[in-house]
Image 1 (cartoon, rainbow, N blue to C red):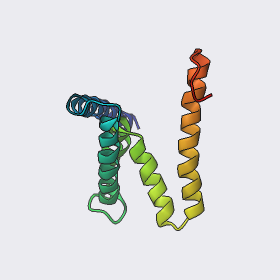
Image 2 (spheres, helix red, strand yellow):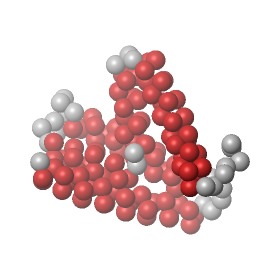
Image 3 (cartoon, rainbow, N blue to C red):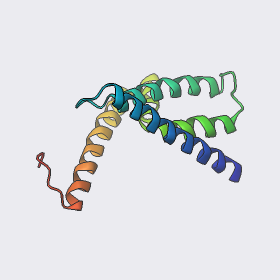
Length: 131
């Protein structure tokens, strides 16, 4: 179990560094009000988690490699972007035909997370124009 946590930690560190590099690079090239760096990180993270999940699933090429799953999926992609995990979970629900649950999860996640940011800002004492 300790080795698994070390792999997750290593992957998370590398994913977080990669996120910072990509975001900084994109911001330097496409300055403006639109968060292009975050969009690219989320899109590439979703692409990568889709590929890794297929590669590491029971029918995949490396189906017996829990270490690779810990390093790449949980660690690296978890550190790179949690949006990729959200996307994979929503896609899995859709694949299973659980459309209402997938929609509820997607809409609920976005609304709860936006509310969480807003409440966090209010708790800090910053009043948002959204209120």
